[in-house]
Figure 1 (cartoon, rainbow, N blue to C red):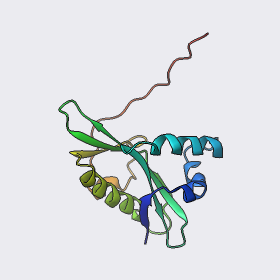
Figure 2 (figure 1 turned 90 degrees about the horizontal axis):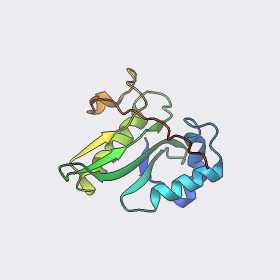
Figure 3 (figure 1 turned 90 degrees about the vertical axis):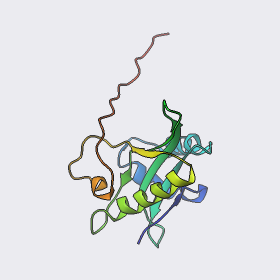
Length: 144
């Protein structure tokens, strides 16, 4: 059983090793800076999935943004998840929390950002469907 809640100041250090799974070069001070930026507004935050022993198994960054029709969209991801035992339990707990959050925030839908079309992702089985792709490019370095 996993509990999902907003990342608290007491759990920033505990969540750090999970964040390092997708960014091994991340320093603790960089992680703290990211957490401060992501949680300073009521329109963004971080959800964490933890066990009954408070071991962190997942992180879901989220933010609310209007689309062109002025509908509010809850964006989330990329999810950072460690699945102990049966696959899909942490993803399921985070998905359920995002479903509650989309209602609480009066959003029209959830847009989930994932790294690539992962055929092994449990998210389609939780009601998500692949919808296009998100392309990214690093900003150019401007001399001077």
